[in-house]
Amino acid sequence: MDSGNSPANSGLRKTALNALHKRLGAKMVNFGGWDMPVEYPCSGGLMCEHRAVRGGVGVFDVSHMGDIRIHGAKKAGGALAAVEHLTMNDASKLAIGQAQYSAMLYPNGTFVDDVIVHRLGEDDYLLVINAGTREKDISWVRENTKGMDCAVEELSDAYTQLAIQGPRAAEVLQKLTDAKLETIKNYWFTHGTVCGLTNALVARTGYTGEDGFEIYVPSDVATSERVWTEVFAAGKEFGIVACGLGARNTLRLESKMALYEHEISDKINVWEAGLDRYCHLEKGAFIGRDVLVRLKNDGLRRALVGLEMVERGIARDGYRCLDESGNEIGVVTSGSPSPTLGKNIALAYVPPSMTGLGTAVFVEIRGQKCKAVVVATPFYKRVRKVRTV
Amino acid sequence: MGYPTQFKYSKDHEWIEVKGDVATVGITDYAQGELGDVVFVELPKVGAKLTTGKTFGSVESVKAVSEIYAPASGEVVEANGALVQKPETINTDPHTAGWLIKLKLANPAEVGTLMDAAAYEAYIAEKKKEASA
Image 1 (spheres, one colour):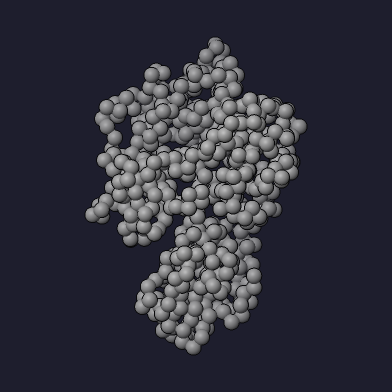
Image 2 (cartoon, helix red, strand yellow; image 1 turned 90 degrees about the vertical axis):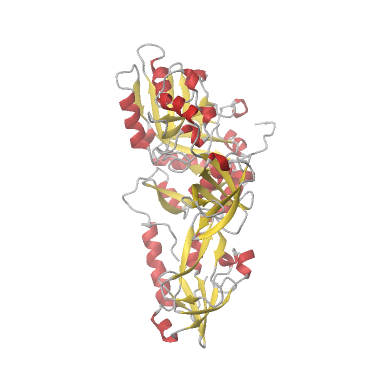
């Protein structure tokens, strides 16, 4: 048997919590050039980590994510104009303290990366970007804001970013901060004191489909480890566990959140990915808009659907989709057992004619044609409770 | 968990226990630990002919598919059907109830070239050292 995990390599980049993860006995993997925990046997492994986030609380080190600040315009609105030019969602609709899911596009309407745009101040924005695309993203932003009235600052290495996720996340974090968490709505953020660190960014965001927060604290090892330890002490009564990239993937897949190089890439456009509601053509010019306008009238070649396996077998990333007669019709972008649903689920690109709910799609698994059906997505949606904290 | 001394072990982390000319094959405790929660097992049919070092099935955890390789050549005489319903047995009981197949050996002498328990434990100790480097 081959475990599929390559041994940790000293050439990989490390977050400030790397040594702590190893002390905890985490299984480490190379994720986009980063030495990251994929699961923690001390948490009970991936399944337990996944269930903790759905039912209690779990913590992820997501410091490998990148951060780009766009601000410093001479004239008011210069930074906003740059963000509007670079991203497809409408950043002019953001209030200070609000964030939005968005993406940076190539001129042909495909993805440079998906991003979360935070409006920090009057004309001050923070773009949180993916780890594997950091260098590409920062060059893209610099190149495409040349001559514009704004300053571009990369802050990726300045922060340790922890995602505290799950229905009990607010209770845990509230013990450690003076920020009034009950006043922060989903996709909003504030600055507050966290673990004694002043002016820390606290955002009600995440990549799990569950309630939760992402906190940004200084990235020195001592501070990062202290914050991690305090979060765990605060979460002990709720059974808090450390979570790795494995659970992060199953959680986001159940919630149909896109992963770069899977559901979105430089070969897939916005309409195919089904991210229409985050793309605001009416806001005016932005990179990729012209081609997207044209493509909108041309109709889709393929579309992203959710699949549930009917026959025994697990669809995995990159497996081919076939029709009943065995012709290749598409590809699986992400596939896994769903710990919450107890079913084998997948996201796949198929022809638009095969996107109807209940349509049979076959997945080729090690040479075998295995039946799946198109199902509604997201596969999992949390029940939103009336919040007390 | 200890590594039974009556087993022989392959570099691909399969164990084999020979009784007469029939051998039982499974994956080791180290292998199941590396895999994580096993959720799916695909085994060959009775009568399938296996060749040493060639893949004969797969074990899947939530995050990955792992091929399993034949530690010896022979013909499959039984597959552990209980694993279809309870694949997690491979995690909880890799060296006993979590066995995969029984094999009628083509050349029983072949098994002698595999590692014994002490050699295998030294082998995985080295692997663990690499992983934590």
